[in-house]
Length: 354
Image (cartoon, rainbow, N blue to C red):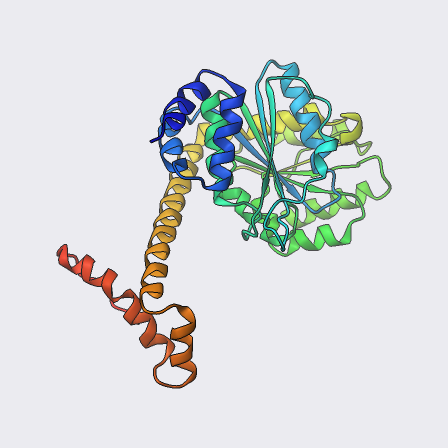
């Protein structure tokens, strides 16, 4: 570990913002030594609540995140924001632009906003994002808000990263409703009908309620759709049903901050449910299991790429296949063979290859 890396972690843990920024830059760029940094930070994580904000472009995610951060600051909490931006197909860098909507907390040192590139990862989140969350957590952030790209069904990766996921929909958006039907419905712990002052909010709320099934749903917030009646329904059926969490539907007008308090209440209720049911611990275990497998696959993949280069490179292997000298299965078996031999030398029987 270099001198810089040796001092970086202590400085981050002592609350120096510059160290946090440098650590995240190293993490995002996958610079040499970033793994040591993340490994050292791990022991200091596990305290922050991570909330994912997803939904189609134009639903108002950035504005909502801005207002959530402002509300959390009013409660005296420290907030980290990771805004995952689309990556350029040409440079791989992020295409920024939404940060201008996160202006309410500019100058507040207890709100740290960081944009990160999706880097083309399916699900809209790169593996670097999960490591950046650890940096925020170790830094002492109480809430970490992760805003996804908003590209549609592939947003589901947020559920592997966040404790609570909010799915945003705007009124009269047929595409958004189709997106929910297409699979993103399952990942929402809270559904937010933003821009609830627009025509069609009633219909959108009803559509979401119908898609979620016949379970009673708490629908509260900024809308004018019978706030009291919905709240009574929620109370009558219990806030944390023993058989599981029932997704909430909250109406907001993020530009004016309407419905934000109710949304945070829904987040808090979901957190209470996760802790009370033991689901929080189970999610953490599943998250780490997935992370370990992802890292192992990445490392094994790097080893095998090295073996491909040792055998002349992928183009040479493809030439042999196209000339019918061999076939893809045989090539793959030959490339993997050194790894299999190493495993068997340790007395471990390699799994059969179908």
